[in-house]
Length: 389
Image 1 (cartoon, rainbow, N blue to C red):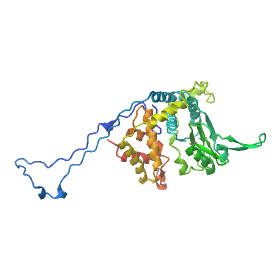
Image 2: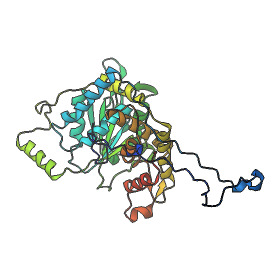
Image 3: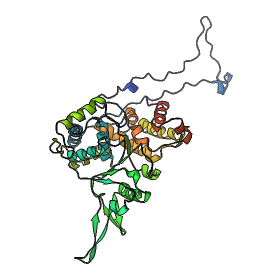
Image 4: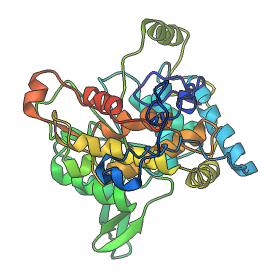
């Protein structure tokens, strides 16, 4: 379906499964016969045990699991979610990969960190996606004076009833846009941790469940760091994906101007023709189908090897944790299902590796001074880890 997050791979053009056409590992040949010299049997005792040459066993070739039959609900859910990109594209130009990332996060019950300069339609994407999915959404502008209760909600005394009542904060929604999350103090940032991980909010010791689905799409500006509070590693690891929202190309930016010149109002999505093409039931059916996607043992081992390789990369002081391995497994399964398959291939793992792991690794200071990036290190890791053949 969609462009995969963080890379320009076109989903409609799946990569050729070249790993299925590789020749098998060669067997070791025996001793060559010399013409004119007949071969004489050598007694077994005449050959030292260490000198015996045993042929290496052939490595089993990787074969994807047979395609499992899909239910009608799974096919219908995929078709509905596939229509999302076209629906959001009515008002957002050139950000298909971001939309796909958010759909993957919804399927995996994860959260997304969007990093990009102001003015690249991050808020508009959330609003258009929620309208196309018929979901509720809210936006919070994080500032230095924002309090945790401003996000989660608080108890308010009601004089009419002479009792305290709970007033829900903006976190009680389906899609929460946490705008410039790194501009608020750690205390307020931490108020999102329970909501993101436990999907509930505790006020005065009483847990209150959040709606389902619930996804946090947090944004941060990669250019301005003065007066900001960098997200701690514990909170960064709570995000399933980190997506770089890039500036549009010249042609896409020209389409944006033509749209605004023609009277497009980003505050009136209904006038732009955006309508609901999927709903929460389609998401639930999609989640159930993603759970049934098959993963071969070789592919699962490949995911582990990729994440373990980040822990020994010389340019990294901290690699991906087992939570990163689990996240890569889940996102690869969701991507495989969206691409119309019931099994995961190594190409699915490669397609989601950078978006899933780039915020889970930490560069060494000397590597940063040399201009090394997390994406560059992950490219090297993917190139060094053998792909299942």
